[in-house]
Amino acid sequence: MRSTSESLLKDVISNFTDTKHIKGKLAEAVIKAKWEELVGSMIAKNTTKMYISKNNLYLYIESSALRQELHFSKAKIISIVNTEAGFELIDDVIVK
Image (tube, rainbow, N blue to C red; front, side):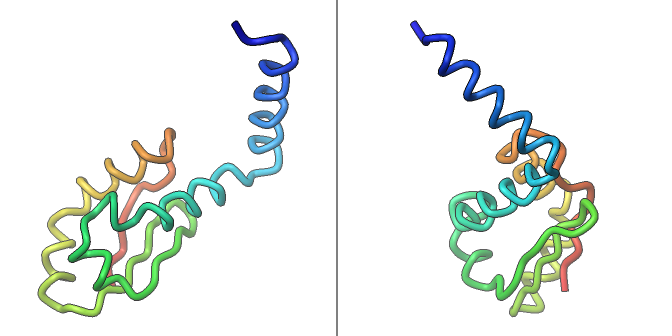
């Protein structure tokens, strides 16, 4: 059984990340760290840059064929990223 101080610490950390608007940045760091695990090695190897801005995930992909394929997989990527984040982190994927 958890003690009250452990539960309170969890609540304090959660409230801090919500109020300081860093929850999204923490989730972005987790997504970047787990990118290969989330999308597979082929996509991860061809991703040269990625970042999240204004609820959009920007992906820079080396392969033009893979870029085209990812345009058709936007909904799946959005689902994967939002599931990993635990909240609706992104609304769209921009592939460049």
